[in-house]
Image (cartoon, rainbow, N blue to C red; front, side, top):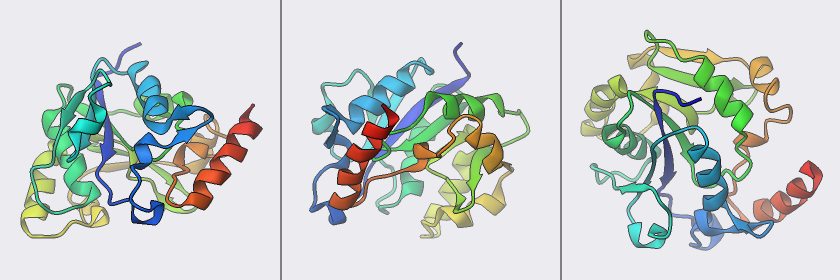
Amino acid sequence: MKYPCSGVILSGGLNTRMGGKNKALLSIGGQTIMDRLYNTLRGFFDEVLLVTNDPLQYLSWDLTIVTDFFPIRSSLTGIHAGLFYASAPYAFITACDTPFLKTELIRVLLEELEPKQDVIMPLTGKGNEPLCAIYSKRCIKPIERQLKSKDPKIVNFFPKVRVKEIPEARLRSADPHLVSFFNINTPKDLAGSEKMLGKQG
């Protein structure tokens, strides 16, 4: 089943803790994180976009590559660009460094879509997960106003829109160990991801 939603991958970080290496192109179990995410998203969405300011690295993937409008380097600028270019009224946003994003978890979020809600947000014991969430195109203008005021913090944007939080119990029904939210920031994380992959079988 296809949903009224585009899939968006954000790849705009500095990757400083990975020695400048592009995390999307790191390999886990013989497959890049980018390949893993792309294969996961294209099963749900007719359209998959990548937000990056270094597009030449991604020409081998069959997706729409777009760049930020605002010079501020932040996840919020990436969300804004993804929403602006998305053809669908909603966009599922994910970061490029989450190798274990589960289709079951995406489905849970998509099933929670409501016309009156602007953001479908996972909520775990660690807090909100804004880079594994669904955003309505209605969020574009509030994000633009915030970025024009030079405020790049995602958490400051949420009070300006209608957010539906999905509780951890519901999330765990689809992803018992919440591995969808595991992201790779350091070489230690990368090594740990190989062990996690082995445990997943």
